[in-house]
Structures are given as structure tokens and as C-alpha cells.
Amino acid sequence: MIEQGSALIQACEKAGANRLSVAGNCRMCLVEVEKSPKPVASCAFPVMPGMKVKTSTPLVHKAREGVMEFLLANHPLDCPICDQGGECDLQDQSVRYGSDRGRYHELRGKRAVEDKDLGPLVQTVMTRCIHCTRCVRFANEVAGADELGTAGRGNDMQIGMYVEKTISSEMSGNIIDLCPVGALTSKPYQMTARPWELKRTETIDVHDAVGSNVRVDSRGVEVMRVVPRLNDDVNEEWISDKTRFAYDGLKRQRLTIPLVRQGDRFLPATWEQVLRLVAEKITSVPGENVKAVAGHTADAESLVALKDLLNRLGSENLVVDSPNPIPAHGTDVRGNYLLNTTLAGAEEADLVLLVGTNPRHEAPILNTRLRKAYLHNWQDMAVVGQPVDLTYEYEHLGTGPEGLDKVLNGSSEFAKKLKNAKRPMVVVGSAVAENSRDAEVVFGKVTELVEKNADKFFQKGWNGFNVLQ
Image (cartoon, rainbow, N blue to C red; front, side, top):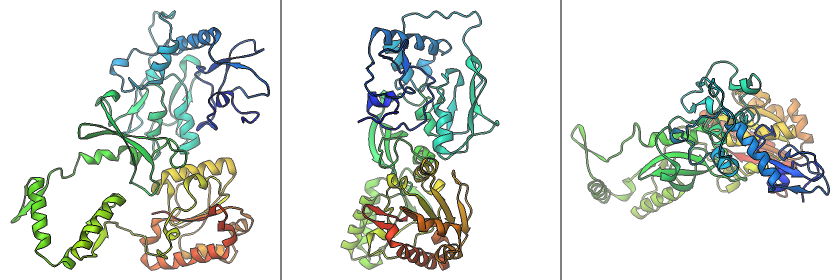
């Protein structure tokens, strides 16, 4: 069933709500509606009972062909050198609706626009821009960074920064995926590969606690880029810049071959030599004297295999290299160290308390969910910890345990809102562990707060207690 008032394109595709607001700039979604004197843009036309829509008729094809001619009037013929080639929306639409000739032959040539410097991650060729404003809407609505905008009108419109500076959002790389042409492309990936040369591997991001669904594109043994994979329950179709560009560290400033100490020097060796040497060293000492240190990006399967190896040797000395580990607190119950609410569920919360966390940096995907709930559901926010620059307004209760006391004793405005909340949510972050003296106290007070309001935090289908690691 399609609700009355939904966008027509949603009814045609049964796609639900759009990620971005409707702008109706490109006009390529024109359809024929019965009794309408002319084709209408389906992205902005509301659904009405009994309406009859035709999506593939000679009139629709001719209308889209005319729109495509306008879009290509100033678009340069850069396809052979454009990084978007092979996965370009404009190319696909041109093949389907483009004419075999154009009628625009200005003596001055096509419009040329000066490129913008958006920083080290996003490459711009603004002459290719078709003014769809996807990047502007994403920055304003999803990322919460009001940095991109438009200036001028019609043929003179340009997209850029309000002030000449680089884009600072931690989600800026997503405008690369959103751009339907080659106006915004990945600067690290520039001129390195074509999409049909790459092997695609679907996997999970390990750089934060979210577990964003990603696709790793590689050529041979070299990772060329990381792009998001659609999952409405986790990251929708966004990923953070850390997730997208961290692959750069796989091939720069790291050891790529094994090294063995000989005297005061490290000499290169083969993997066979090193594995044989490690086996000899391990078997030459008592098992309980063997210790293993795992990196903080190691996956769960590798950690289990490493633990099994140590256990067979008779050792329990396995540690994870984490500068500020969250102290153990009720780890006998699995729900005491998980994000129980789920990412999609975060949008349903009507009140959120952030304790010792900056989700904008720790879990940017969670932050986009909270921003969406703040914009659409008027979610109440409060922070206990250092003041942080978030993409939504919040009430700062304090920097330490005293902030939680204000909620427990009911002296803050946030405590009054908690009494009326239907689905509250508390998130404890990794910053709690930075002060080992207060960590146990903070966890104790959070537990007291949750237990005091157990009827609100724990309901059928709802668990509002979360730990972000």
C-alpha cells in the first residue's frame, strides 16, 4: 500500500522514503499522468487515489530526450579520462534517452567553471556538474555540515563552499558516490583504475563499533578503493571517511615483508623462514610464558584462532592493543557491552543521553541516525563528558559523574524530560575509560539510572542501554 501524499516515484519503484529531500532539478523522472496536460516530474508529484501513470510511452521518451539534451548542452566530452566512466548515471541515461545529434552550437563554446579545492579527499571538475544538488542536500541534511551551497541562477549557477575553504565533514566522501557525473570523484583513487578491472569483495568495516557494510575493490593484491554497500539496518548507503580512505595505510608507511633481528639490525626474510623460526621459539619455552598481542582492527575470527593457539600451548596471555580499553563491567551478561538499541532503532528513541562519547568521531553512522531522529522526531539530546561539536543541539549536563547526579536527583531539565520519555536511550562511549578513577563510578551511576527507570529503558522490543566500544 502507498500512503496518500507520497512522491509518485516512490509509488512507481516501491522504494519507501528517499535518503535526501526532493529537489526536482534533473527532470529525468518525467512520466505521463492521465488528464495532465504535460509530463510531470514523478519525484515531486504527490500520489492521489485512482491516478493512472504511464512510465514508458513515446511522449515520456521524447520528454526525457529533450531534458537529456539540456543536460548535455554544457557537459564536456571527458568520458575517456573521467574516473566516473563505466559507472556514470549520465552515461546510462544518455544511452537510453540521448539523441543522435544536438542542437546547441554556441560560438563561445560550452560553459567552463573553475574547479574548487575541497581538500585532499574529494577531486572536483566542476565543468561536468549538472546542478542536481545531491551533494548540497547530503551535506545539509545527512552530514549536518552546512558548507556546500549554490550561487547564481540558471546557466550561471555554481556549486561550492560558502567560504573558500576545504570541506571538514567526517562524511564528506559520500558526495563522491552521490554525484551522478564525474564532477566529484575520489582524489586518492584518481586515474588509478577502471571499474571493470576491479575484483569486488563484500565485507564489514572494522574501524569502529558500527560494522558498516562495505565493498572492497581490488586489482591483483592491491586494494584500490572502499565503497559502501547498501544495508538499511546498519549504514544505509553511507560510510565515514575513515572507513572509505583508511585503505591508504595498507600500502604506505607499513612493513610489507617479515624482518628478523640479527644483532642490532633487522634483516628481511621469507614467510617460510619466519614461521619456522616462530614455531621453534614458541616450542622452546614453557607455554605459560607465551604472550600474544592483537591489533585493534583484528576481526573476531582471527582473535578466536589466536586464542585457540595459545590455549593449546597452555597460555591465557592474550591482550588487545587498545590505548583506552573500556573496563569490564558486568561482562557476564552480553547486553552489558553491546549497542542493544540497534542503529535503525536509534531513530525511534525520543530521548538520548550520551555519556563519555563523541559519536561524530567514534561512530559517524550512529551520529547520522541521531541527527535524522533529531530533525524528524524532535529527539531530546544530552551529553555527560567534554563538550563536543555535534550536528544537533544538546543539553550539556557536566564533564564528570556529577552530570549523571543531576539526572538521578531530578534537578536538571533533562531529568524532567526523561520522566515523559517513551523510548529513552543511553550510550556509554570509550572516553569513559580515559579516566580510570571515574570509570567504575560512571558505569555505576549509569546502571543506577537505567535500573531506576527500567520500565522505560527495558520494554518489549526495546533495550535502551548501549555501550559503544
